[in-house]
Length: 316
Ligand SMILES: [Fe+2]
Image 1 (cartoon, helix red, strand yellow):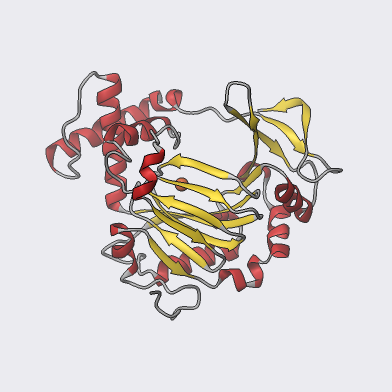
Image 2 (image 1 turned 120 degrees about the horizontal axis):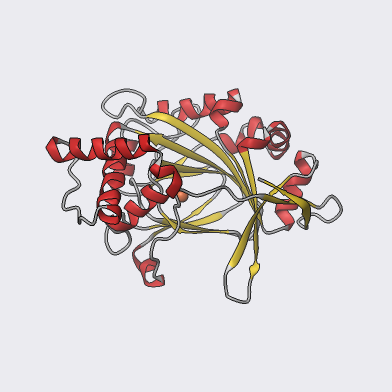
């Protein structure tokens, strides 16, 4: 049973972080009623968004080899409402990244939410908070994956089903997590439909949000409607240390032929690994292993909402 809303933005409270570290925590928020997050206001936000801070991705039709081709595109000069219409009628998702740095009201809400959850002070003292707005087509899916920072998701418009799996074997292996740390590609975890029997499943409605335990794998299926969600990200000292261990263990396993035996977050082995991953970061060797951005090779069609047009010259 949800507690009544006592804060301006949500019913998160100082007890919430301990709860979401143990199991997915469904909470309530009021942002779907806030005029700053109406469909019209989000259309205006889209229009203001700097090119380098958004990605619009077309989830291609299933190809002959069963693979979908994801392509990255551009608004093509459409206004915000027509971008929303395109997503509503197409097979697209739009990620407005780094909202905290670009829109004062997003920073205010982000700080407000983490403040209500009491994470801005010890013992958690979370930092490097980030917010994105995610707009996606009816029926769109986010495949099974895990994220390295702490994560939350708030639903603003539309409905989506989210499956959250425990952050342990067989759902998540140490090696799977290491691969994500090394490549910075979140997908690639092994998924078995039989896992679903042990997933926590939520049909998120506007006014609801979810935080889940660190690294919990999850996947999302939009219902048959336009979806607008807010993504939250945060770090803590413990998450940072976990990330350093994932990275160091990945280097040991994949590049130095040594099978790591511990994930200790303190002591001699931790400091040795902290130094190892720092040296790799400094050397630039990690960057070479990491993804290169997809070229922007389509624009939205001004005539038919949801259709895309190939660019003559892809932009890298
Ligand atoms: Fe995620």
